[in-house]
Image (cartoon, rainbow, N blue to C red; front, side, top):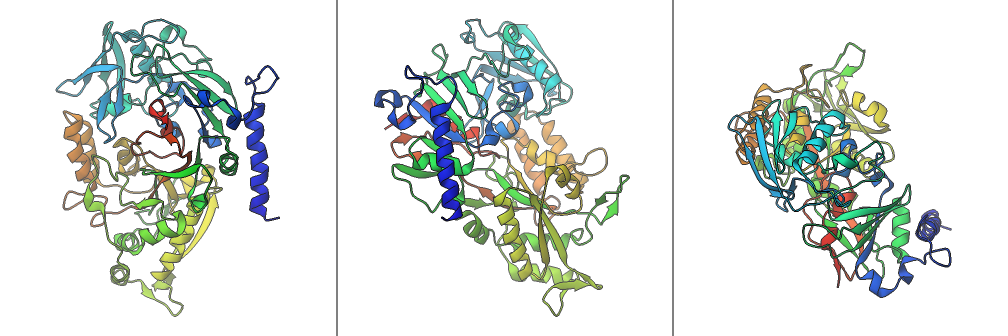
Length: 540
């Protein structure tokens, strides 16, 4: 029997056991029937969604420990947030009714709704908002809240956020922090969350499933989907569950995109889930711990520019992603703060000319050399990530056309960060905030950016000014100038210390009669973003 078919059969058996054998789903006969046997009336206001195992929040549903942020970036289903990001990634309101910032950027004043209750019946007040933010500031293991000095309740519906430093993009932070009740918060909150959002978490069978039910007292429009069941399955099991008709929507990847499933369609959503490599921008040396920092080959900006225009992104998207992706040129693609000058055209001849200019000429075997040194790169990728491996392999083949000999190597994240200081690593990024640009390119106290050796005082200055801007909208132009201002920046004509390759479409098998509401750009992480607006889904 073919190995993959055998694996899928096993996965189907596993998927079926998850749906019929989960704790807490007993019927009078002792076991709930599979999803396809449920009464039609019940199915019309409920949905079963399959996500990857990594989407299950290890620390539960506590915003202080990552729920709503990091790999779980989304609008929390259980809690309400002060703001939300709109489809065009501008800022809208949830709990907030008004938001003002002082002229010096040091105080944000937010007025909240007075008609909101937690699901235990207690009203949500400014004190709960203050408690949430001060708790997140002290305990967050995912997000950086060092810019916040303290949150203070002015009255029952008004909160002041007093900042340590101006932070113009604060509204984006408020869009991912779910408000928790001070009176019902404790060490086990993550497993037994109380919120004021669209759904109540009714059941969590760890490693298997989470069941949400609509909050009957929700202050907004009542959810159309009254029950949402999230199953955690690996990719093969999710596909097998779709084949068996046991799920309504399941995540999948491009490797399955040439398949068909009766009663299902393949949905593809654009993302800012970016893949790209860093190119260390300084010559190699050893740090105080003996680690190699820098790369003699990529320290020449002409080499970095040559690689950027010498990669055929469209070929890569077709060959690796089966066409399900978009070319990437920046960490800010498609965002309000994106500078379109980052875009380049594939130009193999131009790339070769740059390498010639840099003194790297073709040897007898086609590999370029300079002063007896071969043009070589070792591209790292995360072990077990087949997409990053395939992208690295495709890049390896394309670089050979340029006369650069590349090898690829799978590594664990325990060593990847350190090795990336000297070698290119296939990264994944993408978030609904300009801080992604800041975190990658801004100089730290040690004199270099965090993830790959690079520093540019002009780029730093624009980003610092952006954070000090009077308003969020005023900051956008400064973020754009950090990318390229006509003379300096991180794009092709500038320093180009990172090469961005593609944004990976997020793919899902969905029942043909399930209407999935319009999606905004998904961030990095193929997980909870799909259910951001599950309350608006409905059955045709």
